[in-house]
Image 1 (cartoon, helix red, strand yellow):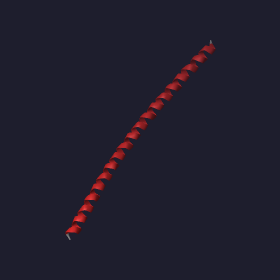
Image 2 (image 1 turned 180 degrees about the vertical axis):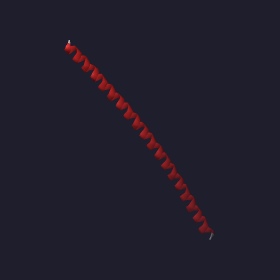
Image 3 (image 1 turned 30 degrees about the horizontal axis):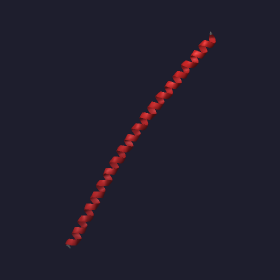
Image 4 (image 1 turned 90 degrees about the vertical axis):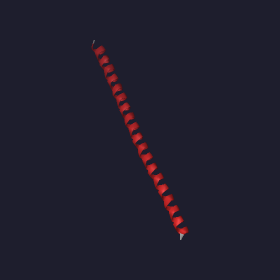
Amino acid sequence: MEEVERIDKRISDTSRKQDEKIKKLIVKDSELARGIRGVKADLEDAFTGDVMLEIFGALIFFQGVLMSAMV
């Protein structure tokens, strides 16, 4: 009977350790996903800013071309 209890305890300890490892992996996965979303948002903001700057520069260039054509 003691052998059965010892095996049962070992199984429950192993199961508990596996559950803890799984929980840690889930937490790490969610932290990683949160970090990736943050980097993606930063890159999108930077890209949007660069595109707007390029468009603004092109508008100023074409305005200069039109002004010189009118003179």
